[in-house]
Length: 302
Image (cartoon, rainbow, N blue to C red):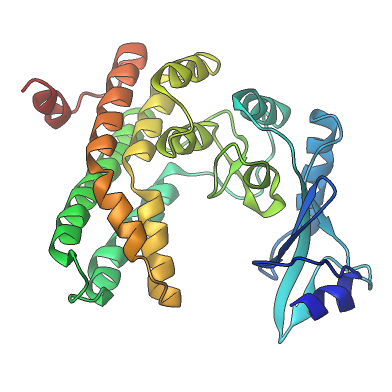
């Protein structure tokens, strides 16, 4: 791809790994894109982020033909640049504040979120799981792990369904959040293709799940947002849903990726995951009076 990079963009870096290179204080990466992506709109977001973050934002770089997309074997690619800077909790708050009341061209619906998560869970359970080799070391223990996370997914889906029943299908306070990779990495934070319009709880949930926030930091972060009981309920359903595991399993299925080491790590994190869910449950119960969950309270009483 380095020849493709030079032919289309004029860059010929000395180091080019995973379609990525660095120049001065910037990270550049060639990424596959969807032809239907609204790149002009994404660049508008980048320009607004630049204003909010003192000149820092990600960008989609135009090629020699002044186009955002270049093709390699009919596959569309874009070159993005992201600044190498420190990112912290206050930057998430700043991003969410910067895009408060953003206009969403697509109808936002929690029922749609529920349907997508249900379909992903069913696909994992019925298709992907059966494709994992049974002769893998620790396959039986992996099954126990899957049963645990499948139970969490079912609880998450039911909890989201209950929240929709109790409070409605819509969440107010839409803003710019992150699709998948949510962390304090500047690349994840400023990646132009990692943005999606949603409620801030999307980012809050992922930061907590990815162990970027301690209990005390999470409580302080929540206080900055003054969540409604509706938002807190949806937040808890998001935290229960094993998004990262399911995404990795789908990537394994699509690309025949080796995920043995990932599954081993996830299996060893079950106890930590249980404790984190209990911790955030009691925080949200106390602060926002979310709907009680008997199995968490019963388990905690032993």
